[in-house]
Structure formats: structure tokens, C-alpha cells
Image (cartoon, rainbow, N blue to C red; front, side, top):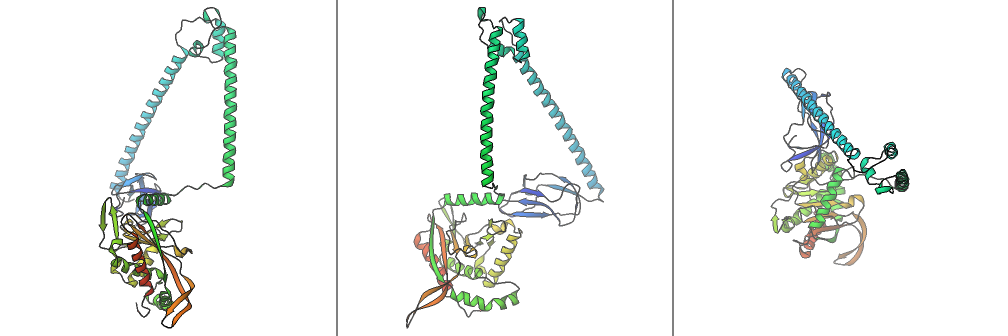
Length: 431
């Protein structure tokens, strides 16, 4: 089991891509694993035949443990090892069979003893040969027979007592069977109605982790959300002007995301208490800005890769990081360390058509910024010659923050500062 990052100590085997006896090429995917952070494909470290799988699917394994044995077809030592391993497996199988047979004998002995206790209970009561024959024919044990109330002399059980007992027993059994059948029929009808109206879908592993993470965040932080509307006309104009030339020169697209990231990073530098985390009653202030970018996957799930030391990157560097992380996230090729250690997160709800959102804080962070959809709007424009109405490109920004450590003044000032940086963007700048 390979080391998947400093914070990862174990992983769960999701699927064996190769089965025992399959040929394996060097660097060919042999198994799919999952940590609490990301799913990964593990390549083979050798060429040969897969001769042993030491763990099953859904088993959780510590990092560094051997999970499979690959045999080089030309290696006699490996062949000898495999033979020893097979002999050990046979010995283990024989031991398991022996234990199973012994357990079956014990269970069988216990059943026989139990039956003997039920059928051979000693009693001082007298039963006529006719009563004994009827009891034997109807499968009534001596224990059951002693509990029947007799009407004969000295409370002796008579033929009629036994027949009455059997009649009552059969009636009760028939009544219970009828009730059970009615219950099963009613339950079956309910299931049919449910199945005809809805579809039952089980959460996958990642969705369960997301659900747990979101509930934990809501129960941990006192969520407050503030909003501001920013005029991003300068950014829209600048990007439209340079995007073709940028693509030809860099071989990648430039989106609004890295431009907005740059503004957020500048605002965090101005208000460093936004870039903190909480541990009990302790506030941890981070020197570096590790910027998380919420990314939607094809499965509908969400993952948050992190741009480490984002304050050291310019727009070109941010663009490369955004494009690289987003692509590898969708291809399930991120390393666990690349989605860990974030200090502030940004999510783009506008990419799905939402004009604003109230995001949930990504614990243990204390704030998350949501970007709304950029829309053209009729806007009042103030000039030195008076007010006028013009068409401007605008977007809502929303900041959810932890009111335990961030008050409304700090949250609102930080959000307004992000908007100020966007609105004052220098359209003459070059990359």
C-alpha cells in the first residue's frame, strides 16, 4: 500500500482491477483504492503474474503493508515463495475445515441433548397407552404432555383432554398463520407501491463523506453569510481582449477564476484574520494562503483541490494551477496532499447558473467565498457630469464565515475589499 500523503495512514481497497493469474505489465493499474480524501489507481511496480491478493475488496489497509504478490515467471525464488505460500494456504484451509467439523459436532451434540431433554423428561404422572400413542403420533414431547391439564382421576390426562389440546393448538396456529400471511401481503403491497413510485439510490462512498463533512461543519461553526455586488466590466473587457492571444501563447484558456482568485488573495493579505482556523479555544493564524477551489465532478460529487502558497503566484501561475488541478480532479488523478491543508476556499456557483449562494464552511477553515453568475445589467453610473444609465457586467459575491471568530464588520469589510479589487482592475496590464 503506497504512501498517499503525509496525512494519510491507511486506505481502503475499492476494486481489484487484476485477478489472481492475470499477467501484469509494469505501471499497469492493478488495484483501485480510496482514502478519506481521494480515490486513486495504483500501478504495478513490477512485470509478471499476480499470484496472491492479501486483502479483499472493502478491506482497510495501513500504508506500507503488502497487499499483493507479483511473480516473475523466470524467477525461481519467487516460484519457491509462491509454493510455500500455497502450502501455507492449504494448511490454513485444512485447519479451518477441522475447526468447522468440530463446531458442527458440538452443535449436533447440543441439539441431540436438547431433544433428549424435551422428549425424555422424567415424570410421576400416569399416561394410558392410547394417550402415549396419540402424543407420539402428533409429535408431542413429554415436556409438552406434562403441561396439559387433565380432567381424569387424580388429574390424569385423558384421550379427550389430549384431543381438545390438539384442536386448540391447531386453531391458534391457523390464526397466527393467517395474521402473518395478512401482514406479509400488506407489507408486500406497500413495497410494490413504493417501488412503482420511487427509485432507491444508495449513496456512494464519497457522497457519504461529503454528507458527514457538511453536517459536521454546520454543527461546529456559527454560519453567517454576507453579500456584495461587484461591477466586473473591466475584467470582462480585458479577458475578451487577451484570451485568444493567451491561448495561442500558453496553450491553455484563461477564465475569470484566476483573476478573481488574485483579488481574493490580495484581500486576505489585507485582512489576515480571515486566513485562520480554530482548534477548541485556540485560533491558528496561517502565514501562507493555501487556496481551496471547489470542483464539481462528473459523478455529481464535489472535491476541493488546494493551490499551495497561492500568495506567491501571479495570474499566469494561478491560471496554470487552476486548469491543472481542475483537469486532474475530473480524471481522478489528484494526490491526497493536493486536497488537504487548505486555509480558505472559493466556490463558483455561477458556473451552474446561480446568481448567488450561501456555501458551507470547509472545516477547519473559518470562511468560504462563493462567486455568482456574471450578468449584464442596466446600472446607474455616476460621473462628474451627472448620473447616467449604462449596461454593466455585474456579479454577486457571498461570504459565509464562522461568527465564533469573525464578526460582521470583519466579514463585510473583507468581502467589500474583494469587490474593490475586481472593480479597480487594471485593463492595461500584460501577462
